[in-house]
Image: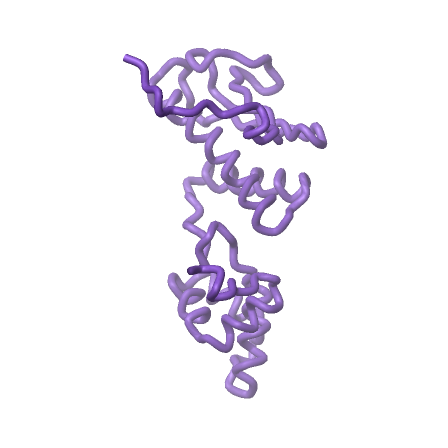
Length: 186
């Protein structure tokens, strides 16, 4: 049975790959099949910078390891795309983000979805500075560092701060995350 309604993407429709993804059986090793791999390699094509991650306690060929490899490749792609597309982050910022997220995963911490939606991460220092300015004399004597710590430690506090329209508007202005014009949403 042939589906005649399916269109095939032309070469012009494809985006050029920005990275090379490989499966590896050892740090610095050659690309290998998923059944023998225990880690991933992400190579940025523009800079040649390389990130490798070996899955702790991985057993080559096990279903858990193969699923983890797929997830690690996906996480690496998502993380670098988030940095590149969200803030125009350069290769250095992308690689630092990979180091951070995979170190967290190794330590058993899955980074929660970024506050503010859209895959963007909230700049806590900037948000805390705006909060202190707008609170004025009501602000905690600890200043911005106090509020950064509170945003880090208190689940939902960032969302609460951003629910204030005045703070949210100022944050968007200063962070370059201007809201979309209403007529563009029609």
